[in-house]
Length: 195
Image 1 (cartoon, helix red, strand yellow):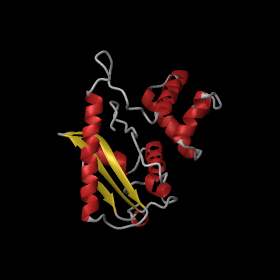
Image 2: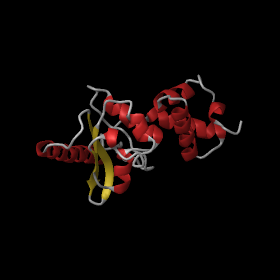
Image 3: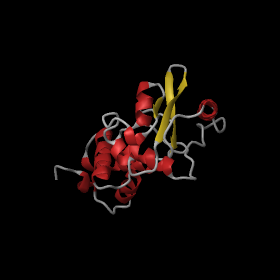
Image 4: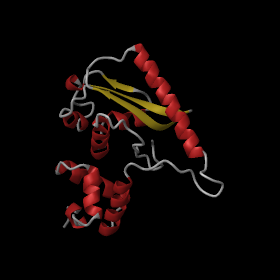
């Protein structure tokens, strides 16, 4: 789902393989990959074989994704009219195009997700409160971003960039880094290059 600040929020992934969360976290940490590009461009992106993809396409994501068994991916924007509200991203360990039946299934899934997303966001839990049920997958990262921004006296966007850079440079997941920062296992100064 596309959050109000323009960042993508993971709402759900199939936990069966673990590849979805791993690749989504890579893209979020690096700020590069098919999902953010599909959100920006507003049209589907397909890569038939990641191992032969042009390295310039996603210069940060492709080298990191090479360590996973994923070969095929598709990122399809979820659109309400002209607005992109999210991206449905699918991965497969075999290269090559999807069959027509698979493409139709992906389209139906995308429309069903749009309906659920729209009704969940538009329907209040009761007459006095906002909609409930959607939980931010990266809530701890957002909390750590605010904590770091406050501790270092920097804007939120810069704090998130520092978190991403530190996570990438030290080969940590953004979630683990956020947890370490909030649990005070890592001081905010460790993410301040001026100190």
